[in-house]
Length: 283
Image 1 (cartoon, helix red, strand yellow):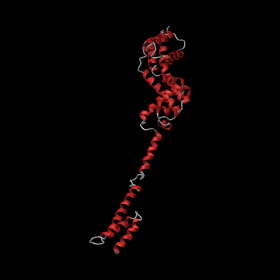
Image 2 (cartoon, rainbow, N blue to C red):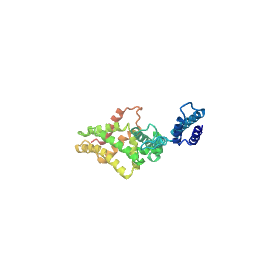
Image 3 (cartoon, helix red, strand yellow):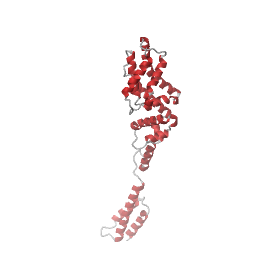
Image 4 (cartoon, rainbow, N blue to C red):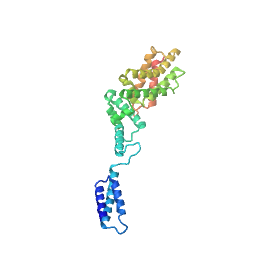
């Protein structure tokens, strides 16, 4: 009984503090060596108490003390939540740069063509795309760079397409090919045409100079045709530069009124404008 009393005292001390597992282990050793015969009921109860204490200690440690990982934070829940919050601030679920970037530019083009650059906010563009306003800056620097990008992309596409058109040889034939190309290229791109012409005033000086140089490169192709025609006696033009600007304005203006569902198809419209342009410069 003295052994049982001593064991109970030790278990009582260790049972009040589950962190002192060494005491519980030493008590168990003492109980196992208490006798080789039948164990008294008191000792059995003490052993059951020890077992319950050790189980409670083990479960408590699993709950509040996560296993440390080498070189990483032990608070995995916080770490996961932090990543989640960071991602949600940047962009919505399912947003990818190769998808969202073009969507941002397309939405900006539609809104600027409809309301004007000065009236369109970054928040409106974000709402149109379906992302948070702050996420736009993953794809663009600011509204000025966005406007320039829209214009530059349009001009690059125009110049690349024009390079595929044969404008050499006979001036009247080259003028007809230029006229048809200009109409075919610009009609499906009404928003791009509007922004490229009407929003030039909103570009800063540096960006304006770049776009103006690209426009001049395209206009020079038409002026070269006119100069060739004048030199060969095919055209009569007082000022080739002014005539170039006038003809381009005439051709681009189709985007303001042409209706694909109207009474004239695109081929008929092209034929009419080829005749207008030819008569405007004919000798």
